[in-house]
Image (cartoon, rainbow, N blue to C red; front, side, top):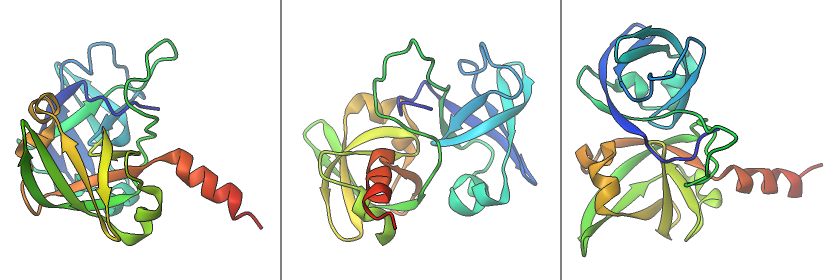
Length: 192
């Protein structure tokens, strides 16, 4: 389980077939083989460790459901180690199980912040509510507004500077994970 509070922006070393290598010295400080690390909000298993970096294998489902199959060497990725039981839950409950992809439709200044409008699959929209949580590339963010197939988030300067959102532009793809609590509530209410 993760919180959506990005610890470090890593750099993709490369994607060779299904193996993704990433430089991320902070997240590998105490890492060992088999540990989980969220990469752009996707929970992945460390399969190799190198000085200051690590590699993960991407399953076909991961490539289909996330934007990780499209990364190239030099791309920035958000990294977060899993939550320890003694840690504070600074963001929200994030599983690292990406529900689908979204596309940045626009980025507009709003004071010292930026409003990102994200087009999202219609099947995810029932789980996205104004002032609720959404994970965008693994970042815990609050929804400002929503429509039938889009939502907006307000990104403060700190978040923009310390995540891969800094390099996003109109048309950029992002990984989306909706609030797990909303999905469980729906499942309980629609049981047969």
